[in-house]
Length: 192
Image (cartoon, rainbow, N blue to C red; front, side):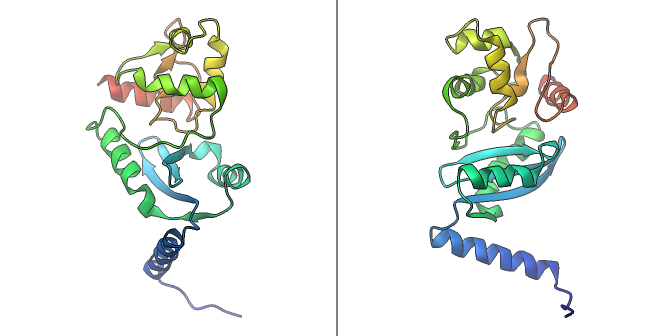
């Protein structure tokens, strides 16, 4: 059976209608959208509580959605409207017009000490960096430098929760979930 060609605008309109109806009926647990940015394609994922994930392309968007379906909810739809505000603020950030995000966050994917570390990362000012040791001390465990590295590596909301601002004690950048090149890109942009 051959299906007629469908106008992409019609598909978008139908998808938006489905997402709006699912949201109205209370069955849209997870909304996502993909956006193009100076650091590549990012997938933004949100619950009703707030932004749940910012996903770099190299992490595998589909794999992350599968993981979220397993640990949060399988009721996931591409639904741009719920992510309009996070995208607007990220766009302002990349344009150099925003230095701090003001978004509700859903940090349920971070537990224990990792969550404690994430709570301290927004304290690092735009254009500044802290060492892993400084973050460990701020989180109340000065010797937990490796655990800080692990928390940064598994940060579910990079850029918004600025783990890219954490560097090694010798000043070198270190690794980054979005790639070491993107970490340099973000820090260079903030330093300008």
